[in-house]
Length: 218
Image 1 (tube, rainbow, N blue to C red):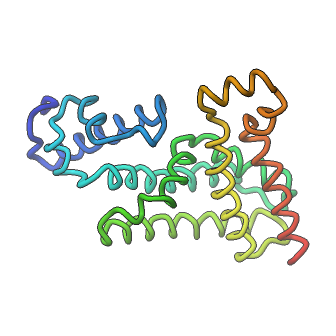
Image 2: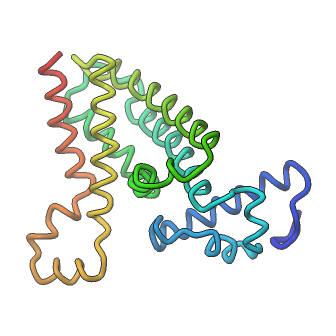
């Protein structure tokens, strides 16, 4: 096996190197948030010179977009497992399943904000296209699952529910990770923190309302 500083030459060695880089980026994201993931931080974590990383990812944005692409597949898998073979389930139960599937993916929820703000627009068009294809395929699969599992929800309604889930999760995740300044304010005025820190509960409440609205319009 190649040591961290050696150049990976075989296809398997390159695969392991990419996996190590992505795992390092995930660790930093968990510890300090996606905004603090940089090429320098990642290469320091794995003991690799920054110039060597560019053989695998041309920029921080490209590396993070790879994590976001994997996040879509993980979300699809969690949501698929959550719904299982359920049929005709109620709005609140469906909302809880969707919220739970996102609650298991904190890095993905964090990345969703950055994808929209910068990541997609800062990579090569070929990389952006690859991301869009993967995200769209996962979204299509999840829409089909929701359409089958939730009563009075068609394909368009399922897509609306997923859009609400994605955008709400991105926003609520950021609220649920307050800065030291906000933590101090919340300690002084607890009622301000009540909604901000209830990621899954608040996401479930919002999605329940969205699903019921979709059903009423069906």
